[in-house]
Image (cartoon, rainbow, N blue to C red; front, side):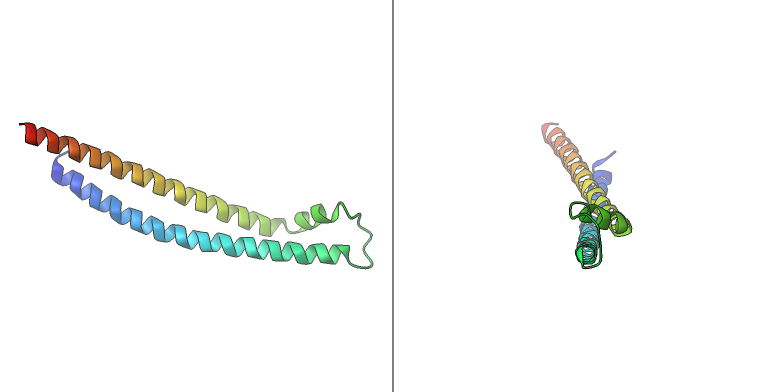
Amino acid sequence: MDIAEKLELLEKSKKTLDSLTIELRKRGYALAVAERDYRKALAIKEVELRGKGNSYPANLVYDIARGQLSDLRYKRDIAEIEVDICRDRLRNERAGIEALRSMLAFDRANYLNS
């Protein structure tokens, strides 16, 4: 791989890094919305279960509410996983950029020494 190809890969990686940053922002917002929806619904469900006319034991109300809202919790967990995956991709892309920079520095040193 010659220097021009490495520079081209470096530019491509920088663009990928930019797009991944934008994607992480979108997924972060989606996670925040999912978390808000889950917590709001959980609080409402707990109030309903603790309300008058319900004979649920106080120590089981939280578990029952979480069980009944498992779909919202699932969506929240998926959003969290997507954010983590995006962060890992960013980390991997940064590592790739550092490897390219190291190869370019090595090529430059070889060129200057020859």
